[in-house]
Image (cartoon, rainbow, N blue to C red; front, side, top):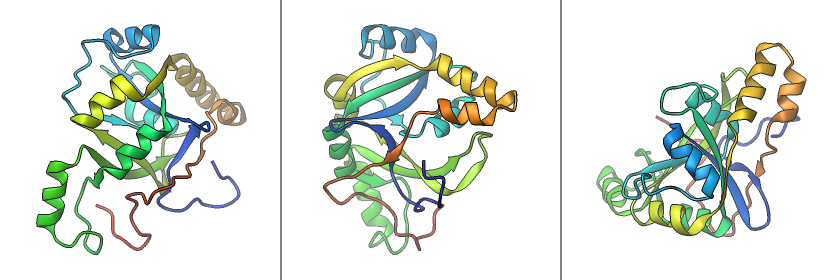
Length: 205
């Protein structure tokens, strides 16, 4: 994360390689532990339901309470094919209507019903999980996108719950430099195709 200047308001930042991107999710142990053990989601994981993935580790910590919230005790780092994320973004619609971005609400609603992915922008978080003035991507996958995510795009799944607890313990102890050093390195994601980001002047619900 850029510490010298404030990042653009809408920017996808992630832990990445030339061919993969890491996203985060949190599940109850009955799903999360088998997924990490086997490197793929178990049959219990519903492929017909919408699932939300987050490239930001700290936003995931905000959502799951450092892996302490009920049903989110197992935090997973899911490494997926970069091409899969690009496909999802190319086939996504914004999760809410924005005047000036969409022609009208009817068009937005029609697109939302037919696209397999949804883009949502939420305030990025700091080590105290307070909101920052720039946004972090959440990507909702359903239908074809959800099935591809689980069965085609996933390269590896790691249980990073111990890391979540270690960072949280360092924050609580006031060891902020150590906590920051433990965080995954997330850099701006370069995408070859236009992505569904909002212009800086667009209002956000």
